[in-house]
Length: 241
Image (cartoon, rainbow, N blue to C red; front, top):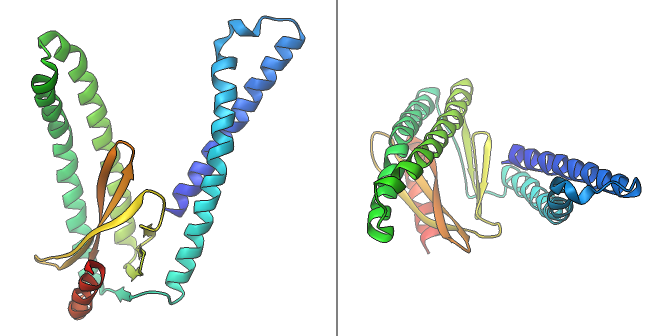
């Protein structure tokens, strides 16, 4: 999460710099009495992009500072639970999660394609010609999303094998491995927290992101050490109140 903020900040600054160069070029062309309006790039890119960066950068810096403060407090002792794992327990979890990611990525393009076909027939009455145009694009985007999912999952898998992880669970955040998750941010809230039984007990947090177009959910899956099952059950009760 912290790396994500740094990446977004650097990207936004790069866009701002390019926008400033484009705006400067527009001014220079105007001073030289060259018709800059014929170059739509200067008009439609530079000014809106600069305005966007001016609004977006303070927001990014604010949430990065909040992230750093929350992480520091959590690992500094302000937690509800702190779990560590033995290597065998941790490696079984890492292998299982990588297997889940591969299955999910394999089915993702098929599921997206099937959903588009159903919606097309039910709500739009699309015919064969419409499907010939839209389906290759949809399928291509779905394959790209699946490959991205695999890439991110493989990186997490490799990092997981390099070092035995630990977890800090707080009132509004979870520090798990090398990643910090929080539901104390704009448009985000905690959903269901439950214990998933199986070969290895999993404490799963549902994180809901709410926007003007609806909401979507993601999960944080934390393995429960064999000697912390009672503690995990108490956490479920606490977060369910």
